[in-house]
Length: 116
Image (cartoon, rainbow, N blue to C red):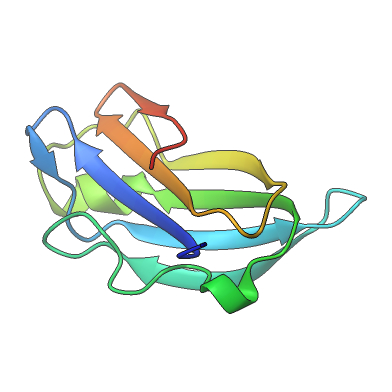
């Protein structure tokens, strides 16, 4: 059973959660145009308080998470100016499954994967 779409941001440079990262979820149509359908800010655990999509809202399609890491770095752990936003584009092909898209963040780079 799906528990929707969730994300988690970890700051590998600080070896812990990234608190206060603004996250935007966009749905892309067949032409590549995007529409923002959800927003949130990571909590003290680096997670959003609510799923970006609940199980009832899950639909097949192409989505993009946009992480505002520039604001995170300006307010907090370093003064890195390398990254501004981190876009992660992915496909939901089975809305019955849970999709978890973590972001491992550092001042000079990032990694993402499909989590569980």
